[in-house]
Amino acid sequence: MTAPVAALVLRAARRVVARAAAEGGGAPELSLDRIAAWLEGDPAARAALNAPAAERARRDMPEADAGTGPAAARRARADEVHHAVHALRLAGELAAEEPDRLQLPGFGPSTWRAIGILREGDRGPAGGWAAAVADLPLPDLGGEAPPRLARPAAPRLGEGALRLLAVEAQRQDVRNALVTAQSSRATAAERGNDAGVRMLEEEAAALERALAAADAAVEAIWDDGVRAAARTG
Image (tube, rainbow, N blue to C red; front, side, top):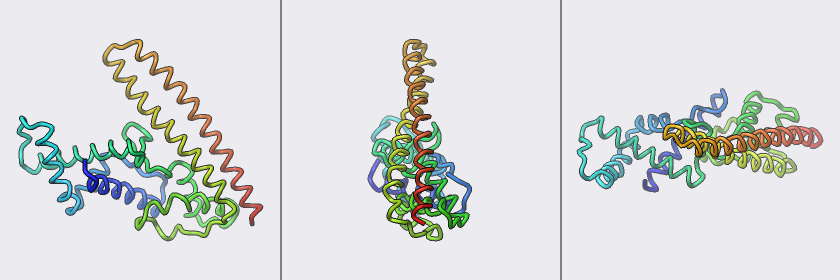
């Protein structure tokens, strides 16, 4: 996986997220297949993927004839996207929300809640707090960020919003670990590794408790933020 491929994948993910923020409806189905499909639909992206995809096929399976037709090229590009997503997850640029669903860091439930409130045009305390929450992650979308959601955020609310997103980042780490543990448990079960299954079930149960605690903390910080926005006026 090369840096240009990672940049292409990350841009595709940001575009999917930005479109969902602009159109409404909550968090998008940001899956590996959707990212690959978006890149397949962009001739420039396909061209940029072709060379590293062919090089990976030659390097990883030099003895195999993967074919040279359109279907083989499409499979090679999809494989390159898969490797890029894996690398971006390791780098913290993407996270797993479900086994087949990805998430951009900073775009957890609270950010989508804030975006929904801003789209509704709420001018009260909830809208003021939402503006502070959304003010932090939306710039990460760069030129893809929907400008119509922009609303000045009260500086006094910034610290609370930052704390909220920090807790949500920790929650995402827990969620990512839970997805991994559940996948590993399934693999252990398939292999008949009963001891591994028990260990991973215990790990998953602990992570589920940590996830519930994080959700409760997020909700409490959100309520505090709305009250702070009301005091700020």
